[in-house]
Image (tube, rainbow, N blue to C red; front, side):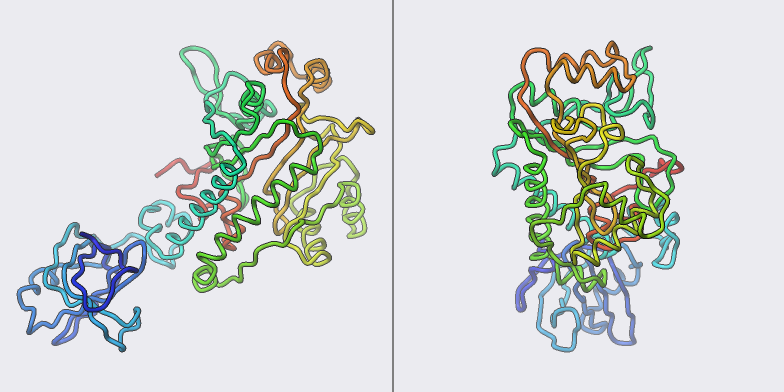
Length: 429
């Protein structure tokens, strides 16, 4: 039975499988470093005592995949945990050709051979961190009695604006890849499920070449019934995120600091809040030409983030009270000031990671807001029908998992913060 490298104990017979990481061939000894997902270990071959293994070891190349049986022994001179394996049997499962990339290759070359690039310890750790973050979020939601659902990704009408959509031929009719499961989250609420979430792909046909955009990414989307105050949603989200980051810190904090060279801190609660009009005033004081109601540019987001992080000594902050005219048509309006939407954006390190809101669930008001935006009620009737037969008040939010991963690990580009990147010029591998 295979032994994971991190579970190897001294003076025990073991069977390990992994990639050849390094080969050091000396006159009388051979040292082979084997790596699996869990760690690395040294294989020590005495050429005199283990002559029967030499025909095999002489064939080995770096990144060949092997299975080795032998005895693990203590050796204080070995850097990899003070232990080594004395092999009795070495089986070559697969010989590797010379790798087409190395650590010095540029990012696009690495993406061409992503399956090889993912073997690097930093990328293995990235995938494990992303897994734990998602798992902890899911466990948090299950503890809160959420129902997991899976919405269709081929849709007949846009769920957000009419732009940034991938179109496809659906048996002669026009269809789209979904920008968001938003409509179906609300359908689930109207069906009486009360608390729902989904983790799945999201598609955006944006010809954007920034370090934080992708044409396909993984979204975590959450919706809750019987929510009337947007503050309830913000409190829910900050507890969820802080809990997930704490789990990552406990399990991988030291490894993250060692491999990525960053100190990873769990945020304190509550996260700071700031209204958009106050954020605009700060930017104006920083000599930016911006008026209330205008979307922030990337440069403005960065400047505002630097200001607020320094002021609050906190990497996270909510921006609330956006003008209704720049938010989605289905966002509920503030009763006291209908020009303001009951929603928010959550920023981490100056980059937006979430949009959340209370949704408009009253049919007549939703129809009025649809018309006000110039949207076709005929085309959106399938969505509007969700609210004709009774629907509870509700709200929710969505998070981009890959952007979270990028910010958590201090990765420069989202291209390296996901399993396989999709962008305007990349559709392979």
